[in-house]
Each structure stands twice: as C-alpha cells, then as structure tokens.
Length: 352
Image (tube, rainbow, N blue to C red; front, side, top):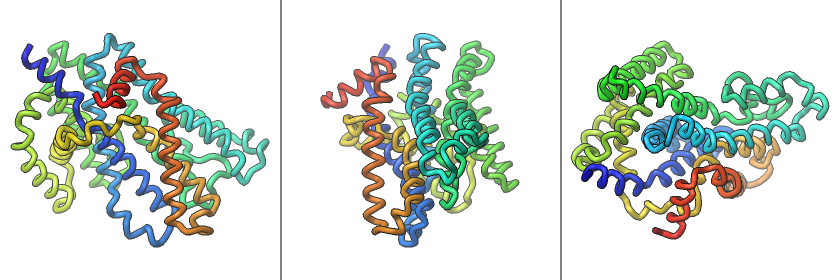
C-alpha cells in the first residue's frame, strides 16, 4: 500500500506538458527554416534537432500510454481513449487541407476533385499511411516539397505502438515472459533493426516503428518502475548524460541512447517544479505538431517570405500556429477527452 501511495501522489506532478511543447516547437521551427529556404535562417537549423525531439515524444508516449492502459477499465476503453485523443484533430487537418487547398491548386476546382491523386491522398492520409500520397494535385508544386503535411509520418508509428502495447501486457500477464526479459528483448531487437538499416544507408526505414520501439519501451519501463527511478534519479543522471554525449556526439551510434536519453527526459520531467503547471491554459502540443507544416507551406506558396521581412513573417506565422493550436485544443480536442483528463485540466487552470 505504501508503494501505491507514493506512486499515485507523484506520478502526475511533472513537466511533460512543457517538454512536449518544446519538442513540438523544435520540429516546427526546424521545418520553418527548411521549407522557407530563407538564407538568414539556415545557420540556425543545427540548433533544432528534430530526431531528438521525436525520440523524446516516443519516450513520453511510452510512459503516458502505459499509464493510460493500466488505468483503463478495459481494452475497449483504452482504445476509445486513444482514438478520441488522436483522431478528431487529425481528421480535421486532413479533410480541411484536402478540400480547401483546391483554392491554391494550379488545377481548376473540377479537375482537382476529379483527379485520382486527390482521392488517393484522402484515403492514404485518413488511414495514417501518409507516405503513400503526401501531395495534393497542383498544390505546392513550386515549394521545396509538395508534401501537404510532412510531419504526420510519426502518427502512424504512435498508432501502431498503441495497438502493440496491449499485446506487450498480455504476454507479461500471461506469465509467458517476465516483463524485464520481454523489455530487454524488444529493446535489443529494436536496436539491431535500427542499426542494420542505418548501416545499409536506409535511414527512412530505420526510423520507423521497429527502430523506434526502444524509446517506447524505455518509457514503459520508466513508468513501471517509477518509484525506483524517482528515488535514484540524482545518482543515475550523470552516467546517462555521459553515455548520451558519447553516443550522440562522439560515436554517432544508437545502442544505449534510447535508455539514457529516455531517462534524461524523465529526469527533467520530475524536476523544475516551477514548470509543473505549464499546461494550465491547454495542451497545445498536438496542435502545434499537426498544423504547423501546412501553414508553413501556405506562407511559402503565397510568397510571404520573399515579399516581406522574413523575420516578421516568421513571427506572424508562429503566432498563428499557436492560436490555431489553442483553438483546436479548446474546441476540438478537449471535448473528446475523458472526464478525468478534463478534471486534470481544470485543476491545472486553478493551480491546484
């Protein structure tokens, strides 16, 4: 009983909201620099590591989704919660872009909707297979990329992980495998998969789900052994920092990195108490992530970065992304969340 008491009273007091916004903003700013092709922005791209940001998302996702699964009444309840969190805003951005970008297409409206590319885009993207057709007919043809929303490739990985997690728990609960053994096996297989395809110069395949599982698994282990890691966090962090720096910047490898980087994310989340209420006005993370790419593409298409001061345009664009993300959270995303999540949002707003 003492373990559960400590667990339940500390686990929700964290900075995950802040970290996720930082990760989402990192991806958004990196895409702004890349897609705008503004020369004065390019030197700053190295400061926005999208790979680390996405890996951080995966660690947090593993942690929070394991928590969600263990607190769900049933498998159906768990799946419904995941669907309600991801699908409404996701479908909205796909449908909005598909139907309203006909006005910026080089094709006529009738030709646009009769084009098989439009229907392929719609089908592929609504089923989370964005890579099958990332572009709409005649849209963004003169941009650096024609992709409408190149950031969405990670969503299918998240969705696949959501479906794999119950299997992970089923195997461990059926006593066919100890959770520690299974975690190590999954972690090692993920590392082998990732490094094999990287060595074969196939990074686009390496970064997909099997390669990303090491980060998700790290998040699950951090959740399952929350009390241990909280107790020893100040002792563990220095070796993790050392291993991370060596792998990330010296050897450019990925063996221990998912585990040590995952712990670094965990460590930050459970320190710096002044950031605990960062999400009191809403969780803008998902909105920033799914809306920023098409908005940047529209600004580039309209020539704003070439016709006006690029710094001013970038600032206006960032404000628009934040505003749209806030509107999405309050009027689209929050409405579908569970009552417990709405209650947590209310407590955050009140500072409780």
